Length: 287
Length: 255
Image (tube, rainbow over all chains, first blue to last red; front, side, top):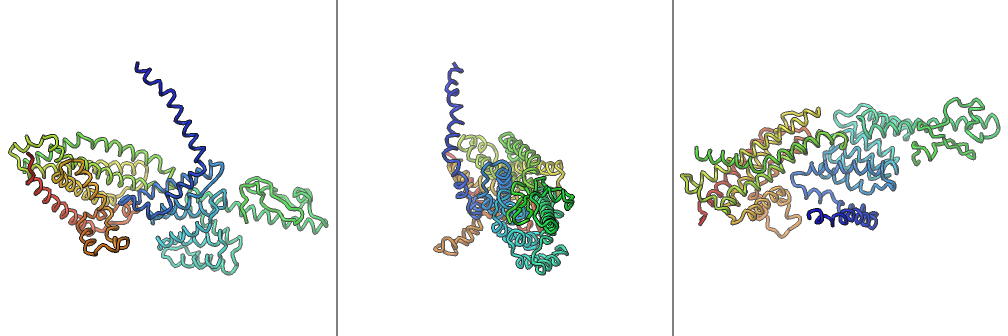
């Protein structure tokens, strides 16, 4: 008798995931946008958690990390539109959450699909961090770095690095780096020093991994430039450009590898003689 | 005095037997999971998040216990008519009211002490620093909880049902956490006279005064004189609420 009364469950239990799948199929693509609508103001979210703002900030920060990691690693069609609102809410709920500014700026600024490809938003986040934590020289340092590395605003970057140098306890080299930026106009060597600083300052984690990858990209760019020089040398000696990069090795002009740090063969344009990081490579970034 | 203490001891036993233990089991699970999982999920914010979770849980669960058990202490006795045999004994209404208040305040103290020990153990076992500074957040939380108990008991004496008393208490506690909004009310409601805002701001219990969770989670010290004034504020407010509650309890006709 009791078993018979449970028989409807045989029909009902499979109906739940079936109907869920139908709902997902219908509204799945719109769901992220709907969530953004609910999440748009940190101040409104703050009013919902009186006395528990920092706990709410932790929850939003965990959600941010989970969202970014999920989209970056697992999503087929990567979408980062919730990233900005999530970090904004986390930092509005807890304006002292320094890690959210630093990591959030990386998540937002790195080019798509590694990050959200929204460097202006990343810089705005760091500016918010500098306003809320005026005694943090690291946030000002990051702001200066990001202004130069992602937006190419070298003069403003130098000014911010000089401001960072004024903060008590700041690193001694900030002023030198600001001067170098102004005199050299932002060379690859400056970029290398900035990423090297970020790599050395960061503990194990995403910032360190990202800075390490950026250094490897710079190594690959240097290798590509050296190969371009060798192509020019080949042309000077033989009166023509090599058809393949392997000809450089066969001609005794290059003894090193013809692949970037990730092991992907370098791209080569015979018409211009330029060697570059292949679009197929994880080292490739848009100019 | 001995009768008051006897009521307090009885209330303590009764409340501990009721629901407080479930809260502690849930807290233990919460802290264990926080300690195990947050290190991997939060990008090295685990220490701060464990402290935030622990302190917020003390505040939240403590408030829930204070409201719902506090309201039940008097109003359920009235609803179940179990108050009459008590009042027939050589026991004054003041002793009964204050004894129940003291009993629940002690239950909350024990509850908070166990939760604090749980938080310290989680921090120690996961290798994170756990200084005495945490107590600078726990102590004001306790003061706030005692005030919630006083309010819950006051509303249970003036209201005819425990549900209504719970609604009133929750309303005042929530409003007391929005005191900053009340103070700046003129920005959104310019028509409200300033004296009304000042009156509301002064009259409502300011539960923000008891909140040092974020400061402590970031390792910022809480100045002793601030804690002293918070203690004075809490004691004065609790005493005032108890005086009104006692007056209401004394004059209430239980026929």
